[in-house]
Each structure stands twice: as C-alpha cells, then as structure tokens.
Length: 269
Ligand code: ADP
Image (tube, rainbow, N blue to C red; front, side):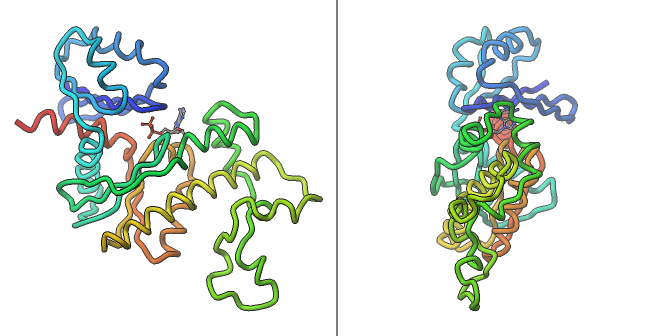
C-alpha cells in the first residue's frame, strides 16, 4: 500500500492506494496527532507527504518518509486526475481554493505559482460564522445553498435601471452593495451565506481569469476542499468563468491533488 498525505491549514487529505484502488478521506488539521499515530501503526512504509504541516508529521514518524513541495505535488496530482477524467489540456491556470487560494500556471508538465489571494475556504468559514453564527462546515454550506443574493448584492442592472448597461446587467457591481437599499427586507442567514459564496467565488474567478489572460490560456481548473458540499460555490465559479469567455474545469477529487501527486512524485524512480 502507498499513502499520500497533504496536511493543509484546515484539512489533512489522505489518499491510500492499494492494488491500483484509491481511497480518499480527510481529517481536520487539528487532529494531526491522530493521523501520526495511525501512520505509525501501518505496516506500509511507503508514505509521501506534502503541505504546510508535512514536516511536523515527518518528524514524528518512526520510519523514513519523503516530503514534496506542495505546489509541485498538487500540479502532478492534478495532471493525473485531468487525464483520467478525459481532459487533455496543453496549458491551464489552476486555482487551488483551500483555506486561502493559490493560483498556478501549468504547461501540463510543470507549474509556476502566479498568484494567491486571501479569499477562499477560510473566508467562507470565518465570514460565514460572523454572519450566521454557524461553526459546523456541513451546516454552513447546506444553509448557503438555499439563499437568495437578490437583496444583498448590487448588480449592474440595478444601477442602470432604465437604460441599457455597457456590460451584462447580471454581473455583480458590488458584493453586499445592495444591503442598504433593502433595509426593509428580512435577510436570512441563508441569504447572507449565499452572498459569501458569491463574493469568494467571484473574487477567485476574477483573479483566475486575469491570470489566464496574462498566460495566454483559455482553460481554468478549479480544485480545493472549499467546493466540498458546496454546489453553489461551484456554480458561481463556473458560470462566471464562462460569462467572462474562459473555459472552467471542475475536477472530481481535485482537493486530493497534492496527496495523490506526492505518491506519484515519490514513486518516480
Ligand atoms: P487546506 O489545504 O488549506 O486545508 P483545503 O483544500 O483542504 O485547504 O480546503 C479547506 C477548506 O475546505 C476549508 O476552509 C473549508 O472551507 C472547506 N471544507 C471542506 N470540508 C470541510 C470540513 N469537513 N471541515 C472544515 N472545512 C471544510
């Protein structure tokens, strides 16, 4: 058996590969010692590590392991997943929407980090809590799916009320910019959380497509656990990428790119 671990800011992504079969699971990064204990009780010593907390794990393992730079590992894992899922892209931007968001350009073989922003999964959880009081991730994301952004986000068409706007009227003009015009409305936690998904998704997409344009590619690939149980975020990102004239790709198990990639990098020789 081979085990790949990507220990990030919020979640530890674990991929176990046995006889070509993959098993994917996550543990909270707060439970690092539980994962270390589990690893130390495995008969398998083919363990590869990546992510911000990889070194911390490596130091406490009672057998040798290999560690890889997370950007190279996620690029490698994504390369594998893209091909398996039938996407043969010669080049692309990939946005890893984790606790924070990291953006990379890939020519299909190697990656270059081209940017990063603080809007991402951590913002969804933190701002989401401030607006709703919900700490549980599943409850937070479930609630958001039912929300309506109409009275919270100001659209271009709200500004150009009786005239033809120079850009599509459905574009967001100001995230949360409609709130003060709608003080008489009853805004639910679901509505507020839907707007959190809106601002995070739109900021991530704007950055990603700007980098795609700069890098002369039309392909934008989205990965990261922030899309877990969150079809709304995925819809915001996909629709907005298309609206701006680029091609979005959402990859199944994309959040495990780093963990999977570390296994491939560790078994290259
Ligand atoms: P990192 O490597 O920084 O931990 P991830 O790609 O794992 O990044 O994404 C972390 C984000 O995923 C969190 O900020 C949160 O928005 C989301 N998430 C998905 N599933 C969970 C979960 N079970 N518990 C907490 N956050 C989760």
